[in-house]
Image 1 (spheres, rainbow, N blue to C red):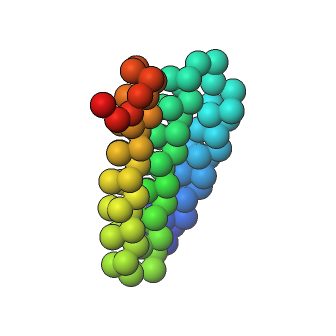
Image 2 (spheres, one colour; image 1 turned 90 degrees about the horizontal axis):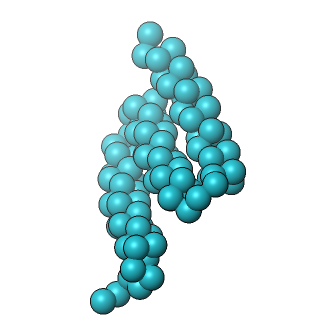
Amino acid sequence: MIGYAVTFAFACLALALGLNLWRLLKGPEVGDRVLALDTMVINSIAIIVLIGVATTNNTYFEAALLLAMVGFVGTVAYCKFMLRGDIIE
């Protein structure tokens, strides 16, 4: 039963990544592109966690945590650059 749930979740996340990629390429403003990129990072984290669930390997959960930290810092830095034009004060 868990196999069907994981397969369904992979399909949903693949669809979500495809739609985010479309918004990243098509987005009319820079804010839309930043939001799409941040959402792609969140979906990638979910895919890594699903791989960990499917393979019952704990290493994937640590990789997801690292990607979450890097994604957060990258989003904050890019938003700060958009607002001020400079990242380092």
